Length: 174
Image (cartoon, rainbow, N blue to C red; front, side):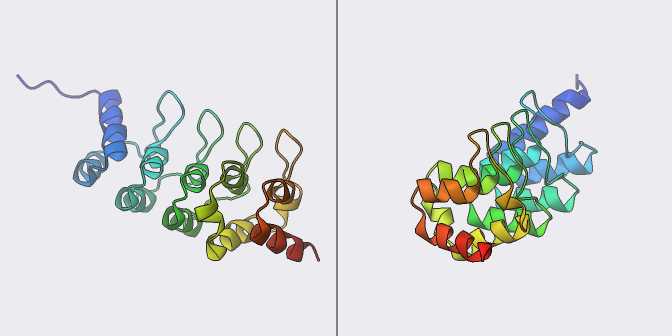
């Protein structure tokens, strides 16, 4: 006997397939009406999970199908926070192209760029283009955005000794 899946179990299957990179299953579930912005108990959407596990083809599909690029989880982290933390330069670029806001702050007040600097993600920060994209997207907001330690990105960059980023930010101050 075939038992139909409840909407909740469809959503859980959807998240599981996004996490494990099963593109065909993700696409089929979307075509069968699964809600692309459904959140799990931690507030993570399917996009959060696809970004966390760096499944670029699923990320692109979710974005094309209307996934909220700025959706926050329980800790106020967006998919861009996850991408920056994971040093996923191609994902950072894609999320920014789809309108991700780099000025979104998590529960600790950190932006995606602050997280990358704080957790010593040199691979991301040494990429001039990606760093410039993160800064440009925030416009002048980065100067005012401070975390719970009352630090902005320039303060953090100096403290963590990221010379390129510090020079770039100081140049913008002139």
